[in-house]
Amino acid sequence: MAQAIAAVIIRVAVSSAGLLAMVGAVSAAIPVMSAATSRTSPACAQSPKKLFDVAIVNGRVTGVDATLRVQQGDEVELRWTSDRSLSLHLHGYDIETNVSRQLPSVMSFNARLAGRFPVSEHREGARERTILYIEVHP
Image 1 (spheres, helix red, strand yellow):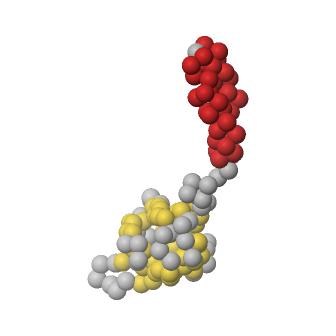
Image 2 (cartoon, rainbow, N blue to C red; image 1 turned 30 degrees about the horizontal axis):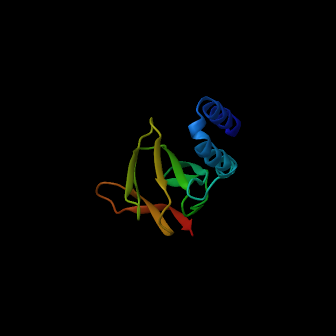
């Protein structure tokens, strides 16, 4: 990319003698620009997405540990399946989803808050019940 920019700058310099001082300043910046774009800066770096396939069978979580661990800043995706319809709530992030027997559901969020957060099943006429925890480590 820097070579293409340098080629354009050289063409401009040949066509207009008045731009020579500007060409020198811009061409001197090209190595700095290419070095800056070849590295990933912390502001642009993204944590990898953490994917968890969570199956609920007979009211119990299967396929994963009872506590899922991620790092603060991670993009988290929980893919839920269940043998019966239910409503789930991730406390602390206030995310809710409904899972039906025929249709899996997805919860996605950025783990910006550190701590231990329960995921509870909510049912009409019954108390909520924690089915797993998500720990977000700083």
